[in-house]
Every structure is written in C-alpha cells, then in structure tokens.
Amino acid sequence: MTHLLINILTNKNSWMNQYNECLKNCLEALGHEVKCVFHKKDLSQCDISFFLSCFEIINKTYLKLSKHNIVVHASNLPMGKGWSPMTWQILEGKNRIPITLFEACESVDAGKYYIKDEIVLNGSELIDELHEKLGLKIVNMCLNYVQNFLTLKGKEQSGVETFYQRRNPEDSKLDINKTIKEQFNLLRIVDNNYYPAFFEYNGYRYKIQINKVIED
Image 1 (cartoon, rainbow, N blue to C red):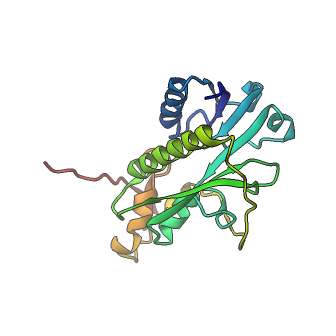
Image 2: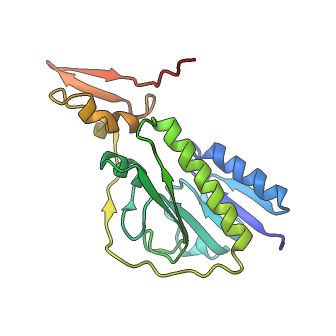
C-alpha cells in the first residue's frame, strides 16, 4: 500500500476526538503518517485531509494543501445538509441514519461523494451511545476510503437538496403539556452537561438529566 500523509482536523472539544485517535492508530498501523490538529492553520501539505466534526469554514487556501479533502456527514446528501443531521433525523423519528463520505469543496456539503452507508438504531440510545455508533461508523468509512481511494470514483450528488439549521441550548426545552413518551426522542439527543433538557414552570427553569439504567 502507498505510504500516505494524512491530516485529521476536528473541533478541540468535540465528542469525535476519541474516535479520531482510534482512526489515527488504525491508519498508522497500516503504515501511514497521521497528524491530528484542532485548527485549520495547523494543516500541512498531505495526501488526504479528513474534516471530522469540524466547525471551521475551510476555504480554498487550506483545501489546496491536500490532494483530497474528505468530510463524513450523517445524511443522505444532498438531503440534510447543514448542522446536526443525525440529531434532526432522530427528532423526526428515524432509526436508520444514512452516512455520506464526500469530497469537501467551498460550497456547503456539496462535493462529489465516494461512499454511502448507514447506522441502524434501536430507539433506546442516548447521546453517548449515538455518538459511539456514529463515531465507529465514521472510522470504518474513513479506513475504507484510505484503503481504496486510488480506485474510488466520486459521484455527483443528485436529488432534492434540504438543509438543517444549527441547534442551540434552547432547542432542549421540554413542553410540560406533552408526555415523556411524546418527547423521548428529544431526551435521547440532549447532553446532560452542555445542552441539558429543561422545562419552565411558574416563572422558574428546571433542568432534567437523563441516564440509562443498566441492570445486571
């Protein structure tokens, strides 16, 4: 196999970092040279740059540093471009989440795609479990791409283009007039530390934490 120089760029505080380390270790075991960075200014010239859970806008100057610039997005592109696609689809009641590995370009989520796959959920997963399933799938797809990138042919996206908006802490608000069952998918995707579930009642705000109880 050809020895490759590879960058992995992600947000410093992203849940994806532990899976990036897993990807880095797997790639190094295959004989490639890998660098994980947290800012686009730290990117170096290489064969492949992976942008995984990366919130920075990567312009042409930085894209030119790499022969291939790869993003993995949890939707069936061009449907579901934008922010938090897995979260929005879970709120829509979906348990099969498509994943697209594609070439980054200056337009948002618009490049040619190389691989499509999916994760299948059972409907009980909370945020850490959702991240684990998605993170491991991303690692698998990136390894697949590296091992076959010389023969993979990019395909143009086709179909209806849709966009998801960015979520904020207020999106974790529960409706006190709805049942827990009606809002369970919202409870599945909240983060107890960064964007916890909450409700407002009689002028006060109350925070709720959710954890799965695993019994022996």
